[in-house]
Image (cartoon, rainbow, N blue to C red; front, side, top):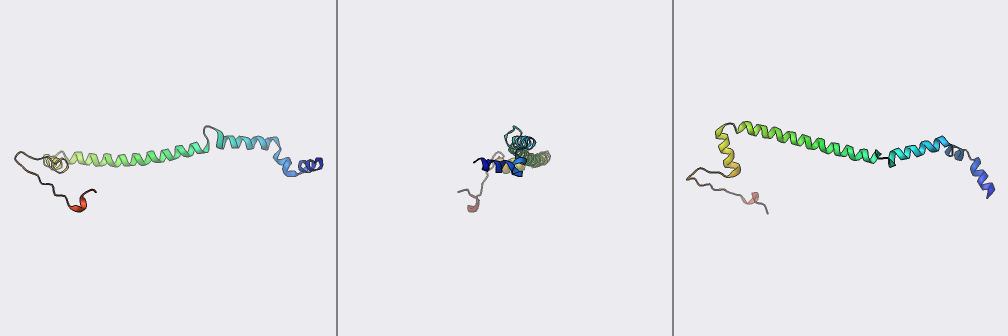
Length: 108
């Protein structure tokens, strides 16, 4: 048993891994990478959240652009009336509206 321990202690790899600087550096790296509040997994979560927010921002910018175009189009009273008729099925007095739905456009 003692001979076995002497062999282990005399091994050059054992000496390297028991060096206090290597042990402390290894523990420090493990702590920073995995156990710390600002670990790699936390940064990955933040990066994915940033990507989602950038996509959401781009989508909202497109919607804003479309809404601005719609507002410009609705400045004309004729376009305003057409918009109300098409989207909200509004009508003038003494007027009837027929909505024709095709079989393939109905939701099941």
